Image 1 (tube, rainbow, N blue to C red):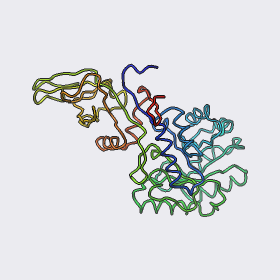
Image 2 (cartoon, one colour):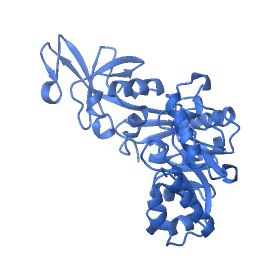
Image 3 (tube, rainbow, N blue to C red):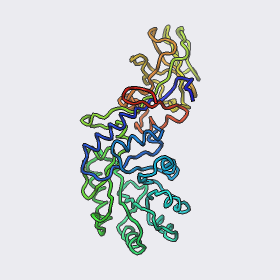
Image 4 (cartoon, one colour):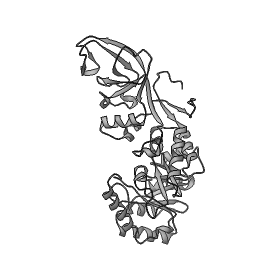
Length: 362
């Protein structure tokens, strides 16, 4: 559909592919590179994003739900897909048919699926090393599951855990020790895939012992605190000026009159609002017009927001709502959140425009 409103996300496919290539080259002692493409590839959308991730070197995909896995499987038939979330036992036959690898998140779950036909279904055991979300929590539980797997001849393809505070060396060390303790009676060298490191962990701990796989998430889209990787931004959000208002001192802007002009001021109305993912807490932070930062003023509306500008700004000028990864980090700090949330709140109402290195729209 034609983009009449002038509000859109620009996704750079070349940068995604190049970022993955750099990561695979830098951390080249792994055999398996999981491209984590849950939540529509962190709000990038489109199967072309995933195809560029694969072209860059990822040889396994990871998603959150069976729905996500099946959407990908309709388009890409020949790459393994791991579901990181929990799949109800009623749908395991679909996993067998579509070759979707399942996660075993607990002893309780494992016991509920044992009565079903598990032949031909690949499994990864998730270990809870302290996050207390999903995962097998004790060595006794692990040994019980491991014994049943051997007795039934089930296909255990992988074992993994999730590092939840990579910036804290002491916490990460404790997690790795817990992982080793819970899996102590299993010869990890005989497990086809063992994966622990994910985006942030990977740059701090380039290779974790006994592992041959890593998971690439937000780092594929250029987010890393390590500048030496020279990763590129892949996601930017834009809109346009649709109206200009000249205010006199004392006039107010928007719902609830939360902003009052201190003198003669100029306000630009921009065609984007909280229904597009620019939540009301963005008030006060900067957007860019013609490379110049201007503050959002007044309460953000469902479909529009207002910006305090100067006479340089003209009707229909492009407004950079999220300019690049550096700007996205600044916005995350303003919102007291993380870049993941900033980009994932930009929903399907906002069209995505896909470009290659030559900036040609796809």
